[in-house]
Length: 136
Image (cartoon, rainbow, N blue to C red; front, side, top):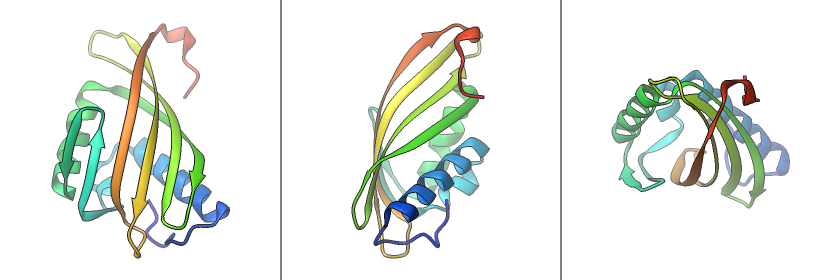
């Protein structure tokens, strides 16, 4: 995610920040993604709470061992000076070949350098059949 996009956000820069996040997460590269977060970034991801870039990387590595062929779409929901909220959907399958669509929301808070220092995520997984996929 681009660190050059710094608060205070405008609608344009908030949309660019969301698109940069979507692109980074679709890379499934934990090293690349973690650089968008402050050293002590605080995360809530569903029922997990942790902080720091190293823990973010470890979380992402675990995530993509389970969530295979992951593909994500993010959409700007709201923004303020240093906060952005998004809705998202992503699709993935498990090791048994069962496909899922995950729906959720994220609330982000950024430091003055444009690094995310807080991320709160809530989501639900819905089993789908492969022909029902819509994110490629």
